[in-house]
Length: 65
View 1 (cartoon, one colour):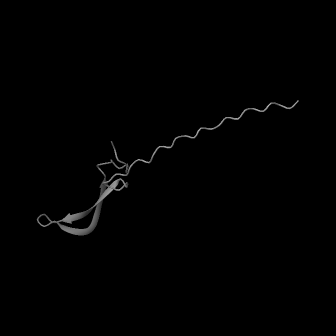
View 2 (cartoon, rainbow, N blue to C red):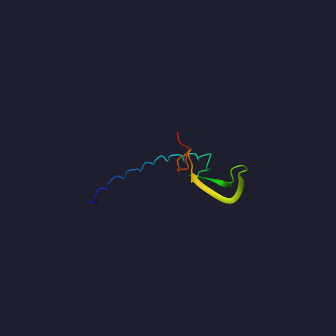
View 3 (cartoon, rainbow, N blue to C red):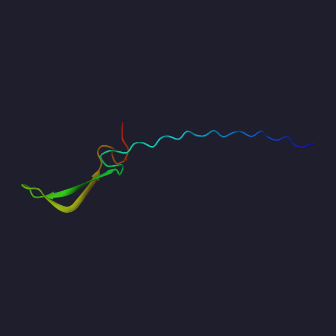
């Protein structure tokens, strides 16, 4: 007498969550980049850049609610 087969269970497909939208201010990078200005009166632009945390998404790169 052959052994009884165990019934197989179907695996449910896990729903995938949609990718959060990218932050419009930093384009999903989490940082903003600005050119450094020098001089009190004219504010000349230099070749140097300064990066800072994006204040809209707090560095996550995704739109916050």
